[in-house]
Each structure stands twice: as C-alpha cells, then as structure tokens.
Length: 108
Image: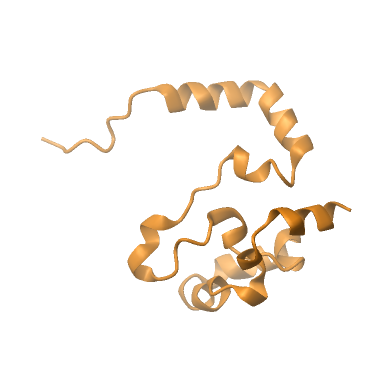
C-alpha cells in the first residue's frame, strides 16, 4: 500500500528507468550512487529526482537542484514528519532559518 502511494505521489521522472540522473552521476559521483542504490529508496527504483527535483539536467544547471527539506519527505514518511515536527529539533531548525544570514555577504 505504501509503495503504491509513493508511486502515485512521485513524478514519472523519479523512477530510475526514466531518468538521466543515474547514468550521469555514476560517472561524476559513483560512491553516492552506490550508497543510494543500496538503500531502500534505491532498491524500489527511485533516483535523485525523487528528492532533488528534475530541473537539473546537466553540469551547467547545477543551481537548479532542489535541496530536500522535511516537507520533501512528508508525502511518503508522514509518521516520521509528524514525529519530527512535534519535537524540539524542528523548533531549533526553524529558529536557525529565521536568523539573518551574513555568510553570503561579500568579504571586505
């Protein structure tokens, strides 16, 4: 049941057979691909686009990669999402994200 729900929620490009992620990343980041394939999500046929989106298609558009958040995981992992949101770590993360960021400012 959970697997079927997962397939319905994810775009078709999230399945490894339909995606360009795995062939390219096997060349660029082979250990990350191996690690991912050995996990549960890789074993059911998902690939990078399931969590990182499919806007990034080449080395020239790497800035289009989506960074996963807790909301990325929520559709498939509702129980874990609820547990995280009910805990203190989500509050700390929200507080950290609310702080002004100076790390991207030019240095003198």
